[in-house]
Image (cartoon, rainbow, N blue to C red; front, side, top):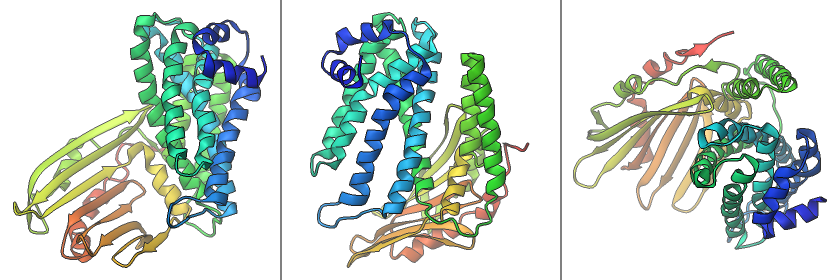
Length: 396
């Protein structure tokens, strides 16, 4: 069946098309060459046209540079192809839990053909005004396609398809977020310049992890491939270091002071979450004077995603914009990435620092000036937090 016919059938008559797909004999390379790469490329090209040629915005149009747009398009395409395979591994691994049968090729079919609606709809991003709605509708229809396809391809009982779909979608959202952040970070770098970031060490470890993945793929062992892919993500997102665990919530709690900028702490929360072996810990606290003035403190340990901070530094991410009553800018100072924004009318803003390629501390809310928010951040024990930068890191 040719590509156009398959796209038409899976979108128009999915209930009858999924059994046909399940019965087809194919291979991973054939699925990539004949379907996945083509549709993924069409989505990326549409994104490039929108971002670098048409631009975003209503009253003010913002465009990426051609070089920057091309770089990000290439990175997004490569990461997107990898994400499809990782998603197939996840669906395959989940199959027994929902009464299904493990089969990696069938899982890749499931992922590829369910994503058809999203890939096709993503072309709609170039349409003014309603492009976002088209993309959103495509995503919803992809979830429906996945729900219809799992019983046919993965042999799960129909009554288990809802739960199977829900867990798969949650994993897909996490994976998509990781891909988007990594892609944006790499795409921002159009001229590397001099940097203290040891690229060779990081890239060398990524190459070693990739070879491990290739070996696992040749073995045909699904469990080994899953472990190898997790190792690849860990090395890539960890910036060459393997962060076995983000800091435990009880370790972050002492960095939430009882008072901040003269305000008493009224509540706090700490949590640690993870997916595919990548963990992040967060601690938040609210401070108030009981009379309407409130500040929020957010402390994050990027843990397994500390490589993203390195990417931001490596790419020299900077930005600055201003209106008649507000401004927002990102810059580097004293070895730390800083983001600040302030609105002089509402007297609200935020001040955030990222340091040690791992931690971020942000204070946001209503204040007399941005300087008060800056002072609130510097009053936090940043040195004590930075001293923990090597905790739970496994060095090779």
